[in-house]
Image (cartoon, rainbow, N blue to C red; front, side, top):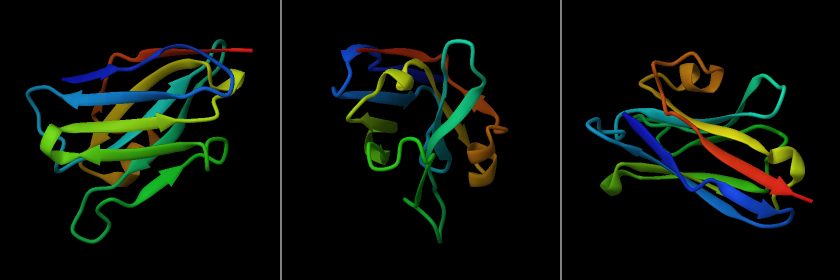
Length: 124
């Protein structure tokens, strides 16, 4: 199971940190990412972090969040984070944690495991 937390209501320009904790499953050998789905929109890729012998820790971001969001992981805590700064109204949506053993599956959103989502609302 993947348990997301950290969502909430914040004013534009503010910050939030989302967490995704693996319950009953270690995330240490998985690539992990975040997706979001805004009101009336398709689910979209936000960020991903790789795991592997050659690309461990490598990060990927959607253009819309580069420079504002940071994805990281703490293997000791079995948790992946998404630090979101300089939030905009258009960042509003439900944010989902996504993991898979294959990095590309995570980036494409076609991996095996999804969390239940945590809602982020950015007010103007």
